[in-house]
Image (cartoon, rainbow over all chains, first blue to last red):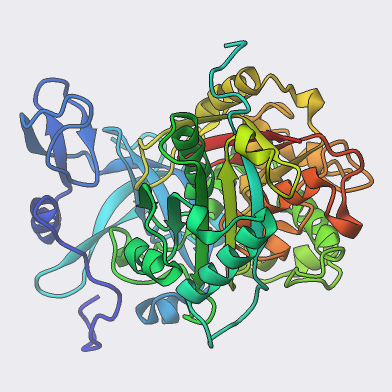
Amino acid sequence: MSETSTPYRKPLPVVDIWSTPFWNACREHRLLMQRDKVTGEFWFPPSPVAPRTLSKEWEWAELSGLGTVTSWVVFHQKYYAGFADELPYNVAMVQLDEGPFIFTNLVGIANDEIRIGQRVRVTFRDANELVSIPVFEPVGEDAR
Amino acid sequence: MSDWSLRDRACVVGVGTTAYGSFPESDAYGLGADALQRAVEDAGLKPEQIDGLIVSRIPSFERFAEIAGLNPRFTMQTPVHGRFASISLELAANALACGEANYVALVYGNNGRSQRMNYGGGDATWSPWGMTSPGALHAMMWRHHMNRYGSRSEDLAHVAVAFRKHAMLNPHAVMREPLTVEQHQAGRFIADPLRLNDYCLINDGGVAWIMTTPERARDLRCKPVYVSGYARRDTYDNSSTFHPDLWHPALQEVTREVHARSGISREDLSGLMIYDNFTPTVLFALEGMGFCERGEGGAFVRDGMLELGRGRWPTNTSGGHLSESYMQGWALIAEAVRQLRGSAGERQIPDCKALQYICATNCATSIIFRN
């Protein structure tokens, strides 16, 4: 997306203490989330302790980048000036193979071809030299 | 559970509502104060008798209390979410039952329309992907329901149409033009699969209720409306996205508990007030509360089940958030009180004896009222 000189106008991430490692990894086109060292459970958005156990014994771990579409919508209403040129645009809820749910955009698929159950893989869009946004593209059923 | 200690221990003895619309000449304090004045007058109380205060959507509890000249024994302010309408009522009932207060005023004031509040945009967790607004979140949940159960957009139209018919009988409703299923279906998408008439109406307005104990209610002007039972279950897992079970297990627990606590069964109910921020919420509520099987909400509402004069459970007889005004549950509870007093005019449910309020959110709540 850096082939033109058009400045990036979509909203940039709200980075806080807990999400900084996530966004730093995105910049390197790697998808990392927190994992409980004892239970192995992943979660998102990033947070200070593991849900339920309240443990601080967690680590950042790289995900497979694969997931499944569990729902999606198509925005027709303009809420962000930076998305105006893309209306109508999709937002999907993807369940990553490691468990967490996220909202993201699907690329490489027409809005009317999106289906629940579609297998997807992460890819990254560079917003600027410091920020990359993880989005997802369709893959075959047997992708691993 | 047959003798729940809080059954019928609190009642609503006054309600006040302002007009709903665009009132840039006032604000949330002014609208709340107008509603409170009407509620106090309706109850036949003097303002200085109020010794408990809960405010919602009003920016500051202390400024509001100062404006109203109240120095209560307990005061609190809720977060701005509509799910706090029923939670406020439950907290007031608890306070009355344990003697924390004798007369509680619950006040809501909202000037979102003249402030151009649009419930979307701004920087947040999902803004880099353009994901924003409660409407889009409910669209996401409804798509999930459509996929799992084969429900359709048209199912939602029957909810919107039923409530519009009721609004046409309510002189205070903002939307009173006829609405058909075809018009609903021809409406523009906001966040596909939800269309324009699946969304509630943001307006300015105020609502207040006065609650007291049954013993004190005897000395007041109006016949009291009893809070017979209430129940709540919160589910915060996946609150950053949405919970794939659409809060159904929590709603089922609330159902069992609210009927047992109130001693009032589903068959005893004369009608329903359902938090209708968006049309799908109504179907999630009906399914969660056991009015129909899970996934069958669409079939349940298709033949006028929610309509006054047609269906078994007339619902949101004021027009609700979809057609009267989005007063975040507060006006629905005022409507329940007016119905149980028999003062709902053209939209009166005949022989109204008991009503259930339902709020299907991550704070799943329900209240059963009787007269």
